[in-house]
Image 1 (cartoon, rainbow, N blue to C red):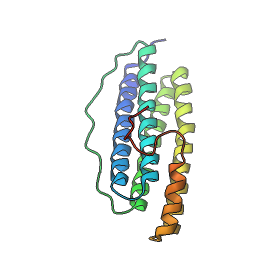
Image 2 (cartoon, rainbow, N blue to C red):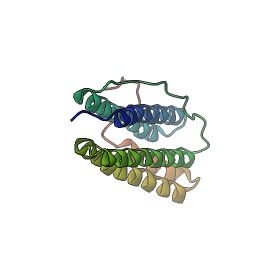
Image 3 (cartoon, rainbow, N blue to C red):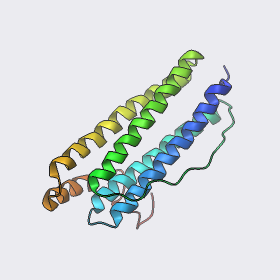
Length: 174
């Protein structure tokens, strides 16, 4: 069964959405690099890479289904933040938007009875539940910490222990 043109267009749009999210997380990492919070910078760098992997997963799906991949420009991400709490609030808003986009994609896949696409999108919906929880949990903890430097540094150290990315891009992306 070939991919419906409508679904192919929306999947191409999702590549753009994922790359925009990656770019946004990279801007968040860059903001943290200008603060003492290098652990949060690493956390955001890991998120950036993860979003790129998601885009590539959609890309490969389109290729495997014989659909044309059409890449669009990515807009400039927000890069001025007030606090770690502000960054994570923006991150949560972004994750919720991506979840809504994937929900919309799933509904279209259901309408056109594309079960393979539904399977792919279920994986993403489960992933998004994890992403939202992770960001929400950190945001709640940051809100509890308030402006207390010691508490913020503890959370930063914890965020920096995330194993999927280096604490910075200084040694290159692996």
